[in-house]
Amino acid sequence: MSDALEKVVAEAREELREPSIDWSAVERGLFARVEADRRVARAAARARAKRERGQMWMAVAASLAAAVVVLALVARSSRQAAQPDDGVAATLLAVRGSGEILVNGTPVAVGASLHGGDVVEGNGAQATFVRAGHVTVVLEAGSRVVVARVEDPLVLTLDRGAVGAAVVPVPSGEAFAVDVDGSRVAVHGTRLRVAREAGHVTVDLSEGIVSVGRAPRVGSVLGTLVTAPAHAEFSAADIRGTMTVTHDSAAVGELAAPFEASAASAATTSIVNPPAPARAPAVAAEGRPALNTAPKTVTSPPTESAPVESAVEPPPPPAGVGSTAAPVATPPTGPDPDAENTVAKAVRACIAEHPRPADMTVMVSTTLHLWVGDDGNVRSARFEPPVARDVNACAATGIYGTRFTKSGSVKIRVDFSN
Figure (cartoon, helix red, strand yellow):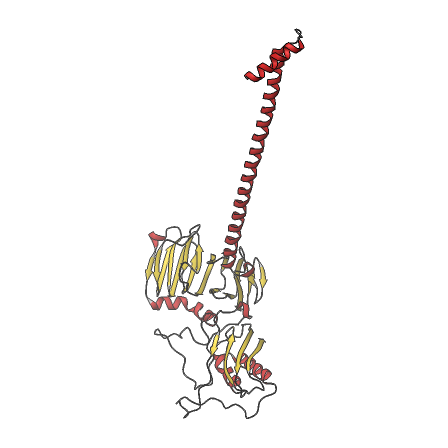
C-alpha cells in the first residue's frame, strides 16, 4: 500500500475511533476487488484478441477456398475445352453392308453419337465414325470396340475384330489410341489398321508413326516406335518379347486395303475446281489406287463431317487472255432469277451420280459458300463440309455456269438423301 493511502487510512481511524472495525480486512477486500476487476478486464482483452485472430484466419481460409474453387473451375474448363461438345466421342458417318451397327446392343442409324463407355458392334456391317478435326475410324464387320476415353486422345478398346483410323497429326502428344488387353497402340497422326485374334495383335501402318507399349494410367505410351510403312505383330501379354516388325509395303497394302477403300472420303481433302479436262486417276507405286481416288461413303451434316473445308479458286481466264489454260463453261448472258435453286439442283444431281456400292445409304448435308462479283458471276466458292472429289468436279460446271442477280457473299444449303 502506498504511503499516501496509509496516511489516509490512519487519519480515518483516528477520526472514527471505532476499534471494532478490522481495517486490515477492509484493505484486503478492497485490493481483492481491484484485482478481480483487473482479471475480468484481462480475460475480456484475451477473448477479444482471440476472436480477432479467428476472424482473420476465417478470412484467410475463405480466400484460399475461393482460390481452390477458381483453380478447379479453370481445370474443368480446360478439360472440357479439350474434348468434344456434350461429351460426344464420335459420330456415325456411314454404314456399309446388309447388317446393322449396334451401340450398347441397340441398332443405330447414320448420325448417331458415341459417348464414353459405349459398346459398338458391327453386326454384319462396316461403320465409319468421324470425330471432326481429329480422326476418322472404320469399324470392320464382325468387330466390337468400347469407347474407353472421350477426352483427347480418343481411346478405343478393341474386344474383337479390327479397326482402321485416319488421324489428323498433332504437334505433340497422342491423337488417338487403340487398347488390346492392356497393350496400347498410340497414334501421333497416321493411317493404320489394328486387328486382334485372341491375345495376338496385328498393326498395319501405311502412314506416320505409332508407339506400342503398355497402356498407361495417365500420360503418353512409353514403348516401341514403329514408322510407316510397317506390319507389326505382338502378343498383348508380352509386347517386347514377341514384337516383330517388317517394312514390306506390299504386305501392309494388302492388309490395310479394306480400311483405305472405306475411309478415303472422310479423311482426304476435297478441292472443287472449275471445269477442266478429265484425267486418269493417280495410281500408287504398288499398282493400287491412291488414297485420293473417288470416295465411296456418305457425307454427314456439317457439325459431324470431315473437318477440312474445300476452297474453290476463281475460274481461270479464257484461253489467250493472259493464260494458256483451257476455257471454262461460259456463263449465260442474262442473270438467273432463281440462281440459288439452280445451283442447289446441280449439286444434288452430281451427288446422285456419285458412284457407290448398291448396299450403301447416302445422306449429304453441306453448305456452299459463294462469292459473287458485281457482274453476277461466281468468283470463288467452297463446300463446308467438303464433298467427294468427283462431286466437286461435277458441281463446278453448275456453280460457275450460273449467273446471279446479286453480288457479294451467298450461302446455299444443299441436302441430299437416297
